[in-house]
Amino acid sequence: MDLRIEGVAKRYGATAALDQVHLHIAAGELVALLGPSGSGKTTLLRVVAGLLPADAGRVLFGETDATQLSLRERNVGFVFQQYALFRHMTVAENIAFGLRSRPRARRPDKATIRRRVDELLALIQLPEHGQRYPEQLSGGQKQRVALARALAIDPTMLLLDEPFGALDAKVRVELRRWLRRLHDQTGQTTVFVTHDQDEALELADRVVVLRDGRIEQVGTPREIYDQPATAYVFDFIGRASAIEGRVQDRRFHAEGQAVTFDAGEVADGPAQLYLRPHDALVGPAGEGLQAQVAAVHHHAGRITLELALPLQAQALEVDLVAAPDASVPAAGEQVGVRLPRYRVYPA
Ligand SMILES: Nc1ncnc2c1ncn2[C@@H]1O[C@H](COP(=O)(O)OP(=O)(O)OP(=O)(O)O)[C@@H](O)[C@H]1O
Image 1 (tube, rainbow, N blue to C red):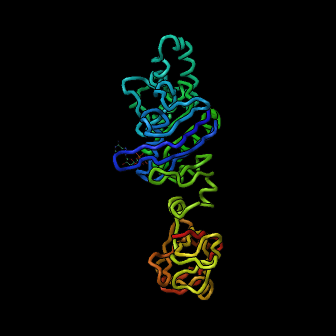
Image 2: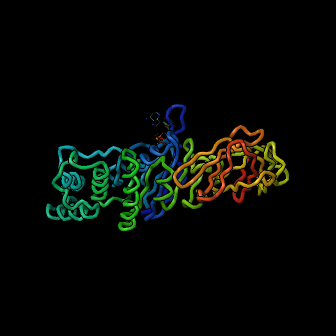
């Protein structure tokens, strides 16, 4: 089912947790709400679920105005960060809970519930775990059970609030790939909250970047990464360096440099040029931006240079691919930096 959020606003005293949010999510999409702490992700998810009333605006599920509907009437599947499983119930009982607690008229019979639970146990790849208790499962397994419980009620959509937030890094990566495959199997409209840009970019069909209760950009992971609409998105979405300067007649003039760069449509005035560490080519001094190597950092498979630019407060971070025989500039050396890819934003 598709989801339409129209002009939704929510205030807590002086804080606008959500400020005129408009968003359309197509049926079957997997969408990430991405943003730093306090940007309004959880508030938006809760408003959609019916856990929290909005001050203004509408939420539509398909053609139905769901704004005034209760949590139960909306029939969404919700998964919290901390596996909120019932500790005194087995895995199978947890999964069956939503079906068993339906009013008698809409409650499936016991055999149907048992069949549905078995199907879901197979779907989450825990077919033998139905009789275990939550404390006998790993964190990742608990979250899969939480997802099965959410799916059991045949929800209108799945809403996941930092579903992998409490798990360690390796399990997180495994589980998000698993969720992607599960989504491809079920085709369930899914919205998940994360503050982890890797998770959003790897998992989602589209990413919604939030900032202070407003949508900063909506796009495919590729669009968000390759064409960030604002300096904020550029900075938030990956490793980035900024060079201060100004735009004049469609050229960006970096503070303290002779070389200038195409500034596209950016109007005259103070501006910043943003680049990713892998989008800079380091060569002999005299070509491109003039810089001095401030530090050399060795990682597995790559070398990162910190480059100091005259009159710039921030150092430039540049990755070198570590070919075994490549010469690596030493700290203190003067180098030239060419920029095959960058973006200019008004400051
Ligand atoms: N119950 C509340 N009372 C007062 N202010 C709140 C309440 N809940 C949220 N806020 C405020 O609303 C804003 C948005 O909060 P929200 O929890 O939606 O952000 P978030 O992006 O989900 O952050 P996090 O990643 O930390 O969960 C924040 O400024 C937060 O302090």
